Structures are given as C-alpha cells and as structure tokens.
Length: 110
Image (cartoon, rainbow, N blue to C red):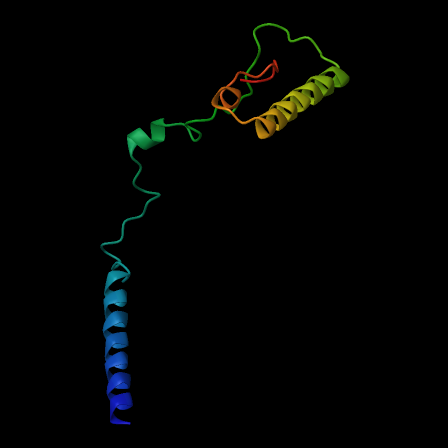
C-alpha cells in the first residue's frame, strides 16, 4: 500500500510539473507584446504570387491540336495494356535481366 501511495504521489508531482512546463511553453502573449500578422506585411512575401509553382491560367497551345476520336485513344490504350501484360507474362515465364530492363514496344511509354 505504501508503495502504491508513493507511486501515486510521484505521478501527480510529475503531472503537475508537466502541466506547468506546458503552460509556460504555450502561454499567450501579453497585449502590448502581441504582434498582429495582418498589420505587418513583408514586401518580399507580397511580391510572390499566391500559387508560386502553379500557373492559374491553362496553357495555351501554340499549334491547333487536331481532335482525335475517343475510339482511337481507347484503342491505343488497349494496345498499350495488352503489350505490357504480354511483357509481364513473358518475364514471369522466363525471368532474365534483359527482359526486365528491355524497352517496350508501346508508343505510349515515356
């Protein structure tokens, strides 16, 4: 029983110290020390556009792109998938370093 009370007292003491340290670390600023972010604006930050890495407008093609029927695109994708499946089955049946690092026959590969 004495050991239980000792552990309980030490735990409460540790909890109180942790609460004091947390309160000191996250304490609010006094009114006179408070800095308002909307009043202070850095000129360098104001010069940077909101989306630095992304342009807001869509890219405009310089050459008019011809309209390709949906069936043609679906046929090309289907051919690409079939070639990739055939290459995977070929590698599973006969694994080799050359077949693993070989170029694909599909024109859609990057």
